[in-house]
Amino acid sequence: GLGHQLVRLSSAYHFAMTYQIPRVWPTHNPVCGGGDTILTIYNHLIGEGQLMVDIPYFGDKNLFRNPNLFSRPNITLDHGGQQRVIHMPNEVPGYFHASVYSNVWSVDYLMKGNSLAKEETDYQLYHQLMLLFEHRHKMRIKRVMEATRFKEHTVFGLHIRTGNGEKGDFAFKQRGMDDLDGWLTRVVSLLCDYKDKHSLFFTQKPLMVYVGTDTGSVIPKLQSHSNKTCGIPFVSSDQTFVEEGKSVTWHKKYDDLGKCLKGWEDMFLDMYLFTRCNSVLTGTYSSFTQSAPLSFMMHKSKQQQKEQQDKGNEQHHHPHYFCDVGLEGNRMDCATTLIEWLNRTSHITWGSLNGTKQRMKHEIMFPVMEAGGQIAQAFGKAGIKMD
Image 1 (spheres, one colour):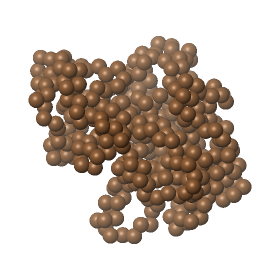
Image 2: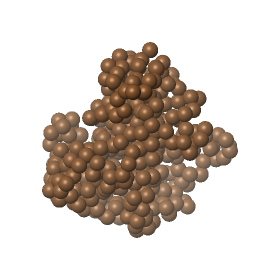
Image 3: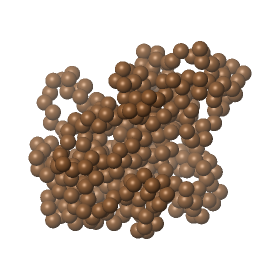
């Protein structure tokens, strides 16, 4: 799926930054039919061409060129006369899922500053992707923003990934919702209570919830529950959802090129709008929200905290949170830093403390600190030599 791809693209982008490879070209296996190639989907989403790793007009803020911003490991770079293209078919050697307990990579590395600026390169990548998507699809984005009056609200993005009948890996990992209708009712009550208790934040810009989902029927249900209680607007973009029980699955192949590309565009639009939200709430763990939305929320939170420290102002705007909603929909655990989220030590928990926390798997990836030999072997032909 889209999140799975972007998480791995972020590893490739960090790899390119580390070993001073100035461009990354995102591709996708042909799934749309009708003359689809490995470039078709990303050409439609963000336009033709490569992603920039070396961004010269960033000046002193250029991670690629400023060693004070991006310190590289002890390596020798010798690209002369060597293979100029490195193919990464899916997983990026030397990168692994973040884990609190694993000996391969742990939160301890991040706390000690040993993530090799992965958090910074992630944001640079995702910011670039969102700008390219915005430029290519600005009229559609404008229509959604105007129809929902997005800028007039404090917007929480709510991601509800039910599976919509999906089997295989999704079902095996028990990522669905056992009582979806009950969960929807309780999450509306949770947000109503939160809005009432934090009304100061929503005086000038009322709370609104933007819903991104694989199951279109959840949106009118959320709207119905909200209309009967506190009246929070629940909105979504103008998109066509798949039939109930038909699922959205990464390996499905399509015969209709236009319809297929529209589906990918709809997914990317939801992700784009999540990055524009004040905070993001996840109904279940997903690489979709753990890619650009997580990165943007952590960046916004960091910027907000810095501004408050510099100016010494009271906080009048709602904090930027990345929240995991509990299994029953009656609690949310919210983080303002990546370490809080990885450690599951929330900045704030709202709702029932007796509610069950969300099942969690960290989909984001970091460089494995002991993987030098693995990287050297995989990319020796590309002129990368580890000291």
